[in-house]
Image (cartoon, rainbow, N blue to C red; front, top):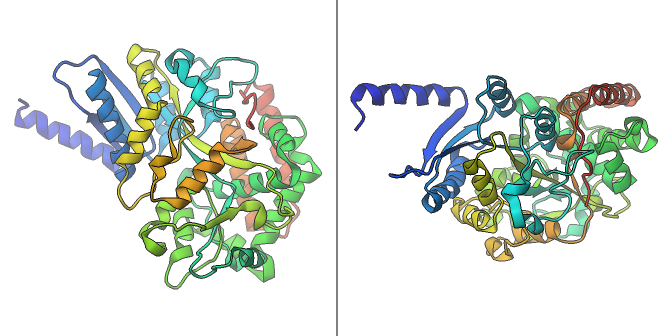
Length: 436
């Protein structure tokens, strides 16, 4: 039994970690442990509790204790841990570009042995190797669909009428704020417009570092398109978005009174809508393919932009390999769906062995899952796949575009081309492919 001084010290350490925007927990302590594995991710609060339920089952089955750390300052904390020689065994990041960076420095390890036969449950583009290699360094433990526009069918019961709202910038729910990663909602706009207007081949060339891909006419048109949509009918939505966080901006869709009518946002945004949406959750038919709403796309869905939370291994131990294999399994992902709070939607999963029954009672979620598993191409979020210096410059450039939306984007794109060329010359790792 712990003495009072030890317990007080432990409580103080936990309080300090929580104050630093992190949560550390030991999941499923066992009397006879088969070792310990540490896992690091961005989830806190109810998201952390759902994930910890999955980890507890792992401990129950294997006897391996799990120490979980969740923090919103994920990149900074992980970089510090790796540089100090004390990385977690497993880290879950939204950026395969970051995992490629660690792999290029020998700080992350291949997952091929850990995944084993489970590789066959994942279609392209989820397990693409780093360019020039053949080994897998990441696997998605949950995924999202980005090429959609959300609306409130209670206000707009005819989907055919929704596109008519798109020309008014005030119709859009837009916020660029996201702490250290502010600007990523704007990169989603650019990426989706490029995918729908220039097609998946041009998108993949750009996202995998092809020289000159930042300065093509198609790229410039996508950037101008974002500015034109958000300034439509004289709207100030572009500049207003710079001082708004993305979550509160999206919640305006179902506010009373509503502050917007259209939300070009990833499927994870359903957790922000929550019980505010009609029927206690996002109802069926509450989203449309982006090509049917975004101007300039001619109504043709040429691909689906997707994203994920990817597990990478930073210590090659039997416990780490076993945890990665477990998190990639249909069993773990079904448990995850069942561990979600009743008022929150299930995550989406790339593992083809996770049946649609996990989305029972969630018509919108089931439809998203069908799109994610259906005909492609499906293309990874380009900025997530890029080397971090390019991604960061991209996010910053989008903020500059929205600050001066009437200015041509040529100078911004030339700057990004130079950043891309420089990091490539310095040996940065790019993905071998992003579409499949």
